[in-house]
Figure 1 (cartoon, helix red, strand yellow):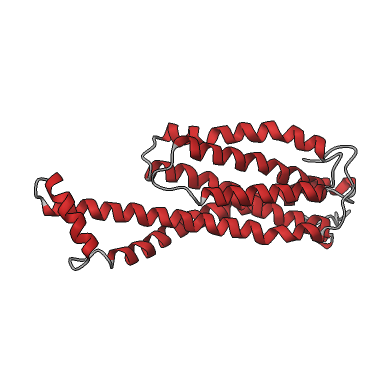
Figure 2: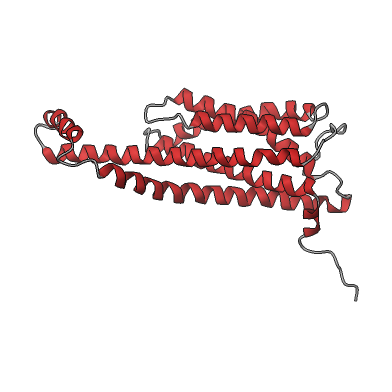
Length: 260
């Protein structure tokens, strides 16, 4: 009986830095992409009051931006060192996260939409070079191994990113709310002034005015939690960027990007 010595998972690929580093990058990309894919609609619906349809519409143009820029990157990678395309991608992603950190409870539909478009336009400068570099020096028989592990990195990154958003949002909201509530006391001049403004609006109903203030505390604490998450993603992208230069010089791929 002939024994097949081919491993289920070819871990020898990790001996190559041209595979290991793209594997790490793909994890970061999956983390960033899926976490923001969850974060933006959730923020739009829970804090801005958007419907499910409107929340979907605010991120949909970003998908078209990705489709439009991918052919451009596919052409550029045959002319330019892939590292510089990735640097541009990192710069765009980091800048988009910095812009996203400026969102508030008063952000408009257009402002959020254009941030997402800018973010997705830069994503293709990151996605295509990663896939191209991961296949460098790989034998034809190992193409499926590379494809499987790279997709695994993206999927795991997406799962971790989605879980991170849900968990951090709950915990950070509670932390901010605890801090803010400690200042909403009868001895606080701001609270007293706000109650004085609200009571006439609620026809002197003190409990209704207090309930309104508490609902605003919840919204503000949730907004701060979203900003905390965005800051973590931005820092994560920034910390991963220097790994680009560990790869060494990459000659332009004359045959175009190799992706599976």
